[in-house]
Length: 73
Image (spheres, rainbow, N blue to C red):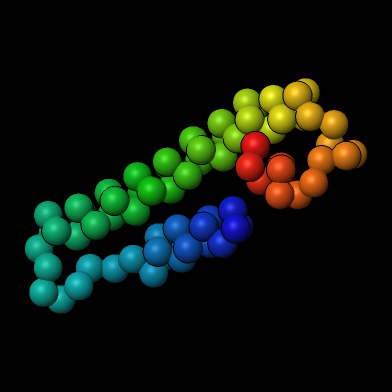
């Protein structure tokens, strides 16, 4: 799922271009939204890697943890 979300954000960025009917301000607004989405995703992934994953590893025995319980964590 993470890869799909990243791919969608990168695709939006790569395919970005100004529409014939929009102003520069409107185009810049759309571009800012795309950049903010990518930046937010980067922050979320960083939090998951640095804080959430180590906390789950420390609190749970991953050799015995069922997938449903891991997802719930």
